[in-house]
Length: 434
Image 1 (cartoon, helix red, strand yellow):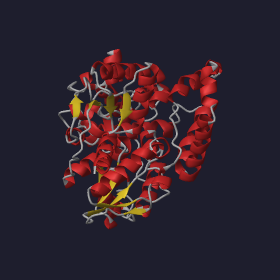
Image 2: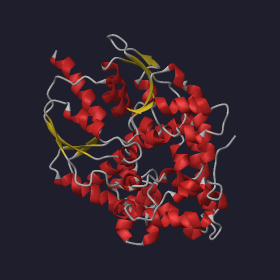
Image 3: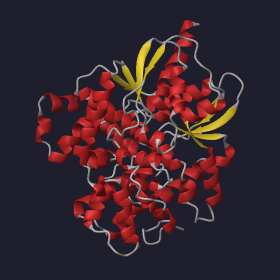
Image 4: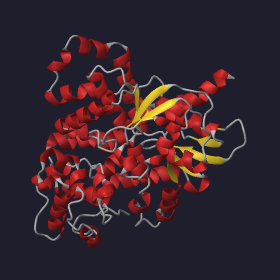
C-alpha cells in the first residue's frame, strides 16, 4: 500500500500553515542569492498552493523551481508557524515526477540507473565502489588529472570529476563485525546503520562510531548488507521506492529488539525519523514504523542522552564545526555535537560564521545545480579558512565531501573530519597512554 501524495490530495492544512510573513526569506540561500520571490520558501509554497487549487499545473517551470530549492530546511527553523516544509518539498518533487514536468530520455535513464537500480542494490553499489577504488589506487585518476585530460570530458562530467569521493580500501563489513560487545558491562543494545556513500567513502567513520558506542557500554549490531534508507528517493520525487526501502530496513532491523537505531549521517537521519509518516497507511508496518521513529537516534544525540564518558587524554588542536542542514534544521540537533567536541581535553572549538548556512551539497544538488552549489561551497570554505582552525568537523557525508573538495581546490591544509572521529581518536589515545 502506498502513501504517496500529490499536491491536490495533500492535507490542505499543511499548505495553510504558511502565513506568508516572510521570516523565511533571510534564511533561504537561493533567495539570498537572487532576491527573487519565487526562489523563496514562501514563493514556492504559493506555487504549490496554486497547483493544489487547480489554478496552475505542474509545468517544466515549476519543476525547475522545485529543483532549484536546496531542501536545506533552514526555512523550517526560521518559520514561526511551524510549516512542515519537508513534507511539502517532497510532495512537490513527487508531483513533478508524476506529471513528467522535467522528463527527457537522458534524465529518465539516469534516474532509473541510479535511484531505481544502483541505490536499491547494496551489493551492486559496493561492486561499483570497488571499481572506483581500483581506478583511484591504480593511478588512473591521478594520471587523468595530471595530464589535464579532465578538460576533455563532457561539460557536466568535467564539473563533477573534482567531487569524486575517495573510496576506502575496506568497506564497513570488513571493519565491523555483525555483533560486537563492549569489554565492560553492557548498558544498551543498539543497531548501527552504515549508509550508502558513508559505507564506501567513510567506512572508517563507521568504525569510529562503533568504537565510540563500545566505549560507552553499547552492544553494537551491524548487519553486513543494509539497504539504502530511501532518503535520496524521498528527496527526489520517488516516494514509492522510498517506502519499499523503509520496509526492507525495518524487516532487517526490528526496532523492538534494540534500545536505539544509530545513524551518523545527518541527511539519512532526518529521513529515517520519518518512517512513521511514510508508512502510516500500511497496516502491516505502521506500528513498527512508529516504534522505528522513536528508536532512531543520531550518534551525537544518543551519546549525550546516555551520558557519554569524556576522554581523559589531551588532544591539542583547534577545530571549527559546520552544522549539516539536516542535523540542525531537520533534526534540531545543535548542542550535542558541540558538547562532544568540548568534552575532548585540549581541543579548542572555534565557532564558525554562518555555521548553519548550507554548504551546497544538499544530497545531489551539487550535481543538478553545480553553479549555485559551487558558490555556496566557496562561501562556506571562506568562513572556515577565516577561523584559523586546523580542522573542520561536520556530521554528514555530503557536507564532508563538499567541504573537503572546496578545501582541496583552495590548496588548504585544513582537514575535514567528524566529531565522532575526534572522540574515537581521543579514546584510542587513552589506551596508548596506558
